[in-house]
Length: 368
Length: 91
Image (cartoon, rainbow over all chains, first blue to last red):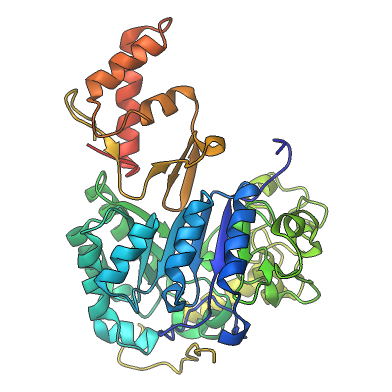
């Protein structure tokens, strides 16, 4: 492949939308794929081989809960045989130690285990499932296998008070990596934004506590903190730029440039059941739509940061302004930044978050 | 953390050099992939749980005979320290 052409580096394989958890911030679309619509093992094997030929290095097996697929061992094996680096993005449910052993034997490189909190009560509030004690068991098992481990804590207004305990869990187990990922507002999280968006004081507290933890754990655990977009001064380079690095294949075979792309109306997506991955990457109108800079408006068009953040997130722009070509409203330079400011004002005017009060969540459903 | 000369570095769990010829000079790790230049590849492929830091430095001296040995040793130590902080290697 010539070097002047971009090839994707990462494949997000959403192999199922089924999940035993019902997290209120799930990034899956509100319209979930049913079990009947899921791609076959053979189709996924073909996708992995096409992905490797296209120059993709890593695949994230995710969902829903990827362990809900009965053929998960075959998928791990096939991905590894294609030459890909295999990560499993999992809640740890349903998993037994013997299944973990089989996954590692099949070639799993990296296990990312998600946590909804540091206590059973908070985890249950967020996921409407009892999973926390089992996750602690999974952590113990992971110590016995040669596999990369990331603990992923999704943080928001309702669990930041447990941050110290989350950090203690990291210090106790010392995984290679720990991610403290603030909820971003897409999918189910957008619907639950009022309950989840943290206050500025909470965010400042996170920055300080995690900086201290990073220093303490240097050389033991690498800590990554993802701030909520709404509080950022400049937008994130969403998925490394539209159609530049990442492809996402959803359970029914629809290929998307990012998790949330379906929210943008008038984008037509291709399906791996009809076209090879390379054709979709190169020619699909949905991938070409926001590639390069031609689509940009001011202030992006003449902004010196446009090669760094690519105008931010197209989906966020669409969700907050109705125009997918506008500057991501989280950017302090964006005309629509006042909308984000107004949302933050409401959050920060509220008197200290009342933890004993149960918000009216919209819980993620489990598809048929 | 800076390694001792008798330390024996190895790739951390979840970290490996690219699996096929086309990708041999890529370090694959959780959420990241690093493209390696010549010297960094030469150092990393010796992080095999057998070479000591001392022997890695000596083999690099032999591989790059025109460079000053002390400079190579310093670079090796610096690189291994940063790989360790990134959790790419253990020693």
